[in-house]
Image (cartoon, rainbow, N blue to C red; front, top):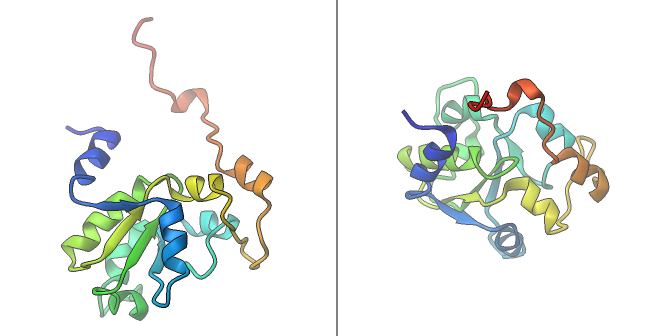
Length: 157
């Protein structure tokens, strides 16, 4: 049995990561990559990178194939195009990029550190209406707030 962190570490053996500043540099090129944000729609609406597309992780594989209600033609046709997969912290994106590689995507990357790192590098984020997100709001949004029930049990008790 693997823990979530072990699963990510195992998949990282197969998935190439790009730092946010590398992604930003690629976006300035003549042939920018497709930005694929795999967070849930409510997360995407809160803050996202301009021109990224949102395909929640739960329907990603169907969105990558023809013949499904979730099919996204731009994504299906991107098998030989650079695709940068984005999530909150760079973990879900590793799993998604791995599956996309299995599905024939040849230039798929995970954005290391996710949108947290993008924000830490002070790169711009947008809200659902397309307005720039304030950096202080983003800092607060990307700060983990765990309840006691979400913490591992203390085995010393």
